Image 1: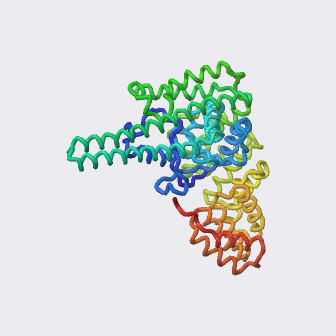
Image 2: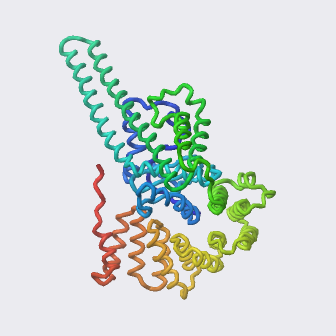
Image 3: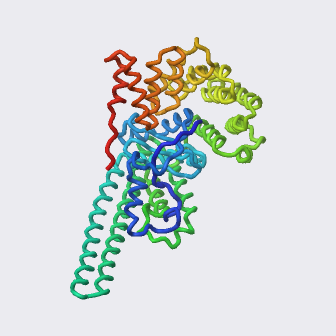
Amino acid sequence: MRTEAVPNRPGNAWKASPRPADGRTFPGRLALGLLAASLAVPPHAAEAASLAIARDAETEALVQDYAAPLFKAAGIRSNSIQILLVQDPRFNAFVADSQRMFINTGTIVDSATPNEVIGVLAHETAHLAHGDLAGLRQAIESTKSAVLVGALIGIGTAIAGSLAGGGSEFGAAGAGITAGSMQIGERSLLAYQRTQEAAADRSAIDYLNASGQSGAGMLKTMKRLANDSLLSARDADPYIQSHPLPAERVVTLENLIKKGKYPSRIDPPELQRRHDLVRAKLAAFTMTPQQVGRRYPASDTSLPARYARAIAAYRTGALAPAIKKIDALIEAEPDNAYFWELKGQALLEGGKPRDSVAPLRKAVSLAPRSGLLRIMLGQALVASGNDADMEEAVKNLTVGLQSDPDVPNGYRFLARAYAMKKDLAMAELTTAQGLFAEGNVKEAQAHASRAQAKLKPGTPAWLRADDIVSYKPPKSR
């Protein structure tokens, strides 16, 4: 599991508190701007915030398997949606645009069953299927226009009063009209969001029924959020919330689930097993070793607990004890690609790149479609420094980046592999591609220009370089 940052600014779609995080309602003048920033800002415009995106082949494969039947039920092509894992212990998931869904690591760690996570994904799938972000953007623009008209009327009232000698009374009336229009606009927009959220809950249950799954996990999640928000919701004004109050959502879901086809269906044992392993893995990678020890004590001899303790040992730098624990995992499940991956990663990051190659080759052989595993194998081959392995490194890094192009680190190792093969043109090109993937367009174009000078015009590589050289960033609105 590795972490990288991407620009974004999410909304808190599954928050327990019915109020903003700081406990205040949005002030009238700022409300529309804050809602637009948290829910409707395009990714390239959110320079002020970034998310720590965790990349892990095992977790991503599991989440994709959770989402696939939901996307099918919603009429969404699975390959059109990217699901990203946010390294954050809080329970949350959200959509940022029509092609990306985000889920926090804490959501998986805190969910005892696959069905709880699947319920969350079903709700977010509904937002994608309904086109809710596009609708929200339109609602924001419409509300802004209405607020602007109200503000102009208020200003006009104040000016007219001043010209007529009306003094402070007209000024106060104008200010009241302006403030009132802002409050009305805010409440109108929040009401629109509540309608979207309620519709997403209903559609989520439809998708679960259509895919032969229960809504019980979604209900369990909502009950937990309702319990968490009991104190803050006691005096909450339901008209200034962006979501229906959790207690209201619980009642609605209970009624929908009772009418459903599979109210008590449980997850298949194999899916539960994979879920338990991923929960242990995420906990071990995101918690301190002490926290891992309390969550998975030595007395717990289950495979997930042993997995967590092996990861914790490797993260503390105790390589020999970690490898011993990982080898025991492999002995228990020799065909588990991700146990082999963990051994390879531990050796690679422990300064033994040549020793890491064999377990990573085994991991790739067991999960050949994983781009991340191929990229890690390519990294190990490059780091081993053996010129004879560079062709294999280039092959694995190229295939891995084709299936997972948003891994800048992969391009850097591919560039090194080409350089070790004395292919400087391709080294320049892949360096340019990596910089471009990171958003460093200026430097990417400089390397792409140097690559073009060394490449034969019209070849696929020359055309890829030309795409970067010719790229013009979109004008910000």
